[in-house]
Length: 112
Image 1 (cartoon, rainbow, N blue to C red):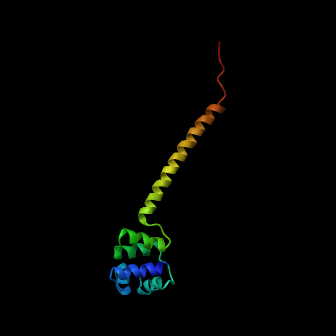
Image 2 (cartoon, rainbow, N blue to C red):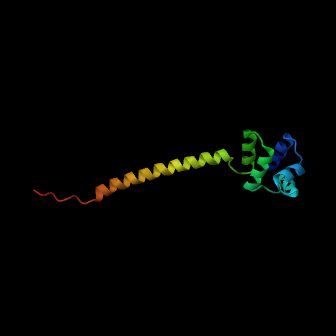
Image 3 (cartoon, helix red, strand yellow):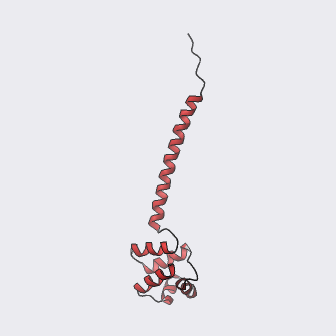
């Protein structure tokens, strides 16, 4: 599906395969293989293509998804979510540990 999306967006923004290849620093035969469906781009190549095409946010997301990647803003959102989940997990673990230590700690002898 990436090949269809790339061809559509490239044409939408008025670039030839040769021009896209030259501006993005990607070999022209590789751009041709992307559009024929023979190859999928690495994330770095995809970022280079997006930098040249400068597509709308919707088209950018479409390109990334068609290539099997998350769009940059989605990566940030996932990273923030994971960081928050880890923070909550660590807080829960430390709370549980403190409760357990309190339960397992032998009681102090009482003196009269």
